[in-house]
Image (cartoon, rainbow, N blue to C red):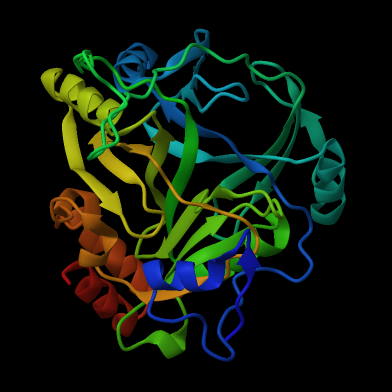
Length: 381
């Protein structure tokens, strides 16, 4: 078993011990492409449609977003960090997720994408301007890759609290009273998607956008059939980046699961959560700490039932860390915290879900009865 030492740390062993029983077996998916078309640098923003932009703005401010721009037809949300906006919500007839927008490392990457896919490079409708290429992934999600002309400037930060640890007393003669106010979003972290064509979609993101896998999940007793979930990060070589920028899992539906936004620390998560609860919003799951990614987390539903996550203190991996492999289970989602809720797992039965499952089982995709039963078992394990 190979190991890589970075700065005196055995990154292969450290990753395995925390995230999986073992690495890949012979012949399993390598978790990266040998010759990707380009390598995206990060998520730029996510795109949604909603009929009521006023209501969307109220929740956005309560959740902790800043407003980058607002018009009659679009609401652009941002974090405190310099860079691109986090989210755009366009006025539309119904609430729906449109797709993710990734940030190109170089302007020339857009030309390379356009030539390879037969697409055009066009102007992007976003604060700061720039160029964009429109793609379509195997699941049917519109995926855009953008190169920004001008970044948003940084905003004032929510400062982390100064903490005392055992005999390490950093704060004396001063009380600790974090205000009960919205968590101040710093940046967009990741998006999670469900797909019926997991293997095809996974290979597309690795081959086309140059992303690499941090962790794979497989179904108990079905490892030989390959993974059913992947936590995928950007490849910036020796620069450590978020454990996952995109996560995908096999399921009967195709759509948005949740998106995650970084805040300062645990107190920002907790105080911001109290603020949201006082205003009548629904917590989906939290507070806890994840296993894959290690983030402190707290999940909420907006008025249109979209799930959003506050997170802090996530793992950062460079290219040297190879994929971990572990069985999928609901109990394996967190190191500590309350059990994963049925709302978070999407396990509330409904006629619509039954129709979705029946449609998936009859379709040309990767879901079959054995896979479905394995997913249901994992959700309840």
